[in-house]
Length: 206
Image 1 (tube, rainbow, N blue to C red):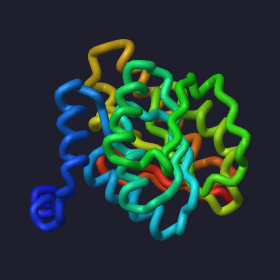
Image 2: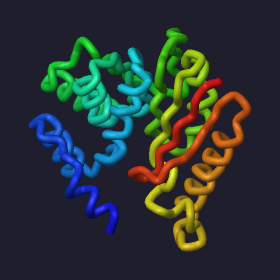
Image 3: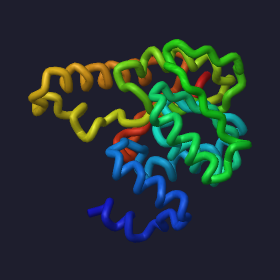
Image 4: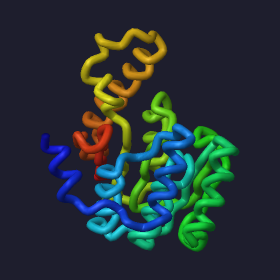
């Protein structure tokens, strides 16, 4: 399999903090971006020469910390779950990236971000709110900036909704599919969805 080959040939993260965060996520059953996805995100920051990233959905701080560690980008990350927020705060301090990562405890639907010069917005939060997040935070993105969205294939369920038995899961998958159609047809963005990790999209603001 191609994926098995790539896992063997590509170099994994060797830093202790990265392995510790991955163990935390696994132990707590907390979803985090795939290793393939975070490498892609880091390289997008490097290619774009991004200075500021706005992240919607912090969880334990995995992606925020890795973005800061490997690119020195400044990250503002919003998390509504207080328990996860506190865990992320601890992890940020452990990783010694407090000067680069600002965590905000709030519901992203309610919070107001005044800065209008973000280079990248990374959406990895409640899937049912993706369109609302895109519309709201695209205003904080500078012209030529990019919005990156994760989990757009949702473990293959978006491609095969007929196999889903749960009604709630079918509704969620329907919303993800609506979001996918929304971004690829958005008149103010050039978007493409890639089969990276669990499905990542790049939307470039015109």
